[in-house]
Length: 81
Image (cartoon, rainbow, N blue to C red):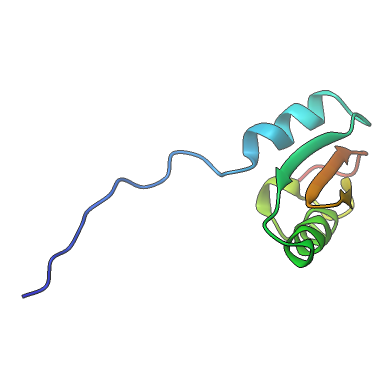
């Protein structure tokens, strides 16, 4: 017999609040997260720059870099959808 655990749907996108804060404070560098590995930090940084993560769209509106395991990003402007 299978047992299913029901959970409610997420109420918000994980990074939406921080991305909106960055939009209200352009060119302010903010630590987005601490990744578990250097590769994960680098991947997250690229995803932010390229708009892969939905909260950080459109592509090019955010800049990002890593500092060790920390992912730092800023809203630099762009055409909002």
